[in-house]
Length: 144
Image 1 (cartoon, helix red, strand yellow):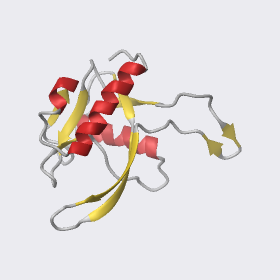
Image 2: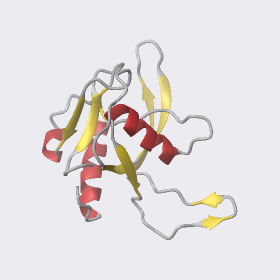
Image 3: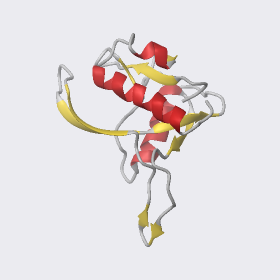
Image 4: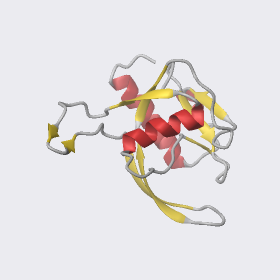
């Protein structure tokens, strides 16, 4: 989130607009994946926003991670490799100035306002998640 806008990318295989994302790397926790993927795909350092703020928990090896905006289970229908996804979608705030992006990751990026969401060429579930992000962000009284 930056200036009351959310970054979306044109997905290479699906051909629709979607929020940045990717797969976990070895020994990576989901929040680290979200930060890394945002940097790679939209060229922004980000700070994850805990959607259910609470006290930090640290007992031995147990650590409280920020709660995702949404957790989804879906079948992704790539032409050549359909498979299932378990998506943890995080709300994040862009920090600092954008840096360069990996061309192999994203060629088209848009920062959209909530009024633009329904006009995006994407899936209804993506629109629902984007609307939820705007609503929750406003509810947490965040500054874009």
